[in-house]
Amino acid sequence: MQLPADFAPDPYILVLTGTGLLIALVAWLPLALRRLPLSLPIVCIALGAGIFLLPQVTLNPLPIRYPEVTERFSEFVVIIALMGAGLKLDRIFSFRTWGVTWRLIAITMPLSIAAITLIAGWAMGLTWTAALLLGATLAPTDPVLAADVQVGPPKSGDEDKVRFGLTSEAGMNDGFAFPFVHLAIVLSLAATTGEPWLAKWLTYNVLWEIGAGVVGGYLIGRLFGWLTFHVPAKTKLVKTGDGLIAVSATFVSYGLTELIHCYGFLAVFVTALTFRHAHRDHEFQLEMHALTEQVERIAMMILLILFGGALVSGLLSALKWTDVVAVIVILLIVRPVAGLIGLIGHKADWQERLTLSFFGIRGVGSIYYLAYGLNHMENVQNAERLWSIVGLVILVSILMHGVTVTPVMRNFDRSQGRDPDADEATPPPGLQGKASSDA
Image (cartoon, rainbow, N blue to C red; front, side, top):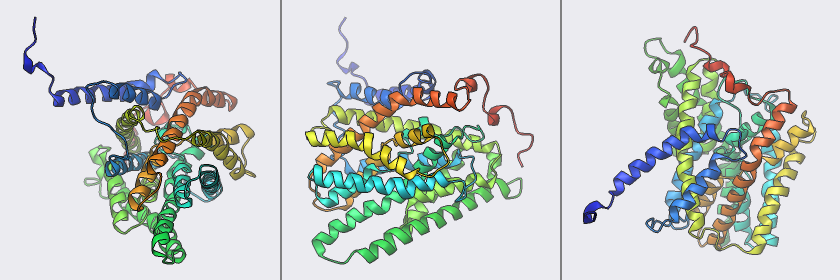
């Protein structure tokens, strides 16, 4: 039987079918991979590689070909992840109780940036501005791909030192790494114009953009917290029962703070923390977190499928052998050593310190920072090589951390006297029934 000539499938129908399958995977894969030494990102990359190896797929999803799309899509994924990270933190914010966070932000991250910059400038032969951009790009722990080592949903009680430290670090460091990305941009422009740069960078890119980001995020979080939980009963947003309020808060926080030229990533995380603090024990916190997590997971899977496609389309083609060695050093030496240095004197046992130091996962945030930096710098040398280096770091990090996270965290839970399988039989406290009051 011969098929008619117009039997070729409609691309729209194919996209619709593929989207449905993707959403099914979003819901099912985390459960299927729960006990396996395998992570959702690994599956997504393999799926993307398989799809883009098909002869019928002609799209070449290399980030250097689509710089604006790469920057904006990775930006979207990160801000959704930051809202989700802030909403699920049970620990009340304070400088004392967040001590591990400040150590990872103020000591570990700058040490990592400095070390990667030196490696890239001396051992890899990059220009110093490109080396600094690479250091700022690869230093932050990713809030998207670090989900397997982060705390559980709000009110789940799953908030030990390791999970809290990695979650809060991933939320904070995206904002605090940005000044170093801007420093690379400023130095690149200064090399061309010869204009003084230090005072402007310190006052604008550091003091103003961090300070305004924190204040702006706090004010927007207070506003959404009041509208959701504290206005008169008939009009408060919690009555809608719609977790999209969290997505709304994400976009408003990011949009308004970016309009006044400050760090929107930092603002979104502060908004999430403030929003959560408005009524910490309300069941609606679970609904907001659940929806942001679903949106984040779908967006992450799409991005990683494209990343898998980029890998088989030549993303790593510009690598040199020195780059491969440097990537291994960055992941196995720089981050762990900088992490251990940052945790000197912290009240944590050696297993906690080693776990905190090892799981500095690199991912979507690095894609955004490199895209942003290259889009705002002129005549960047070795741009394709920079993408190859960052692509290899992300790939190795996903494979290395993805394979080890399940056995390491299960062993860690047992050593802390917790049963890693207990929550399979008993739902988290926040899901054990409807609250007696939704005041």
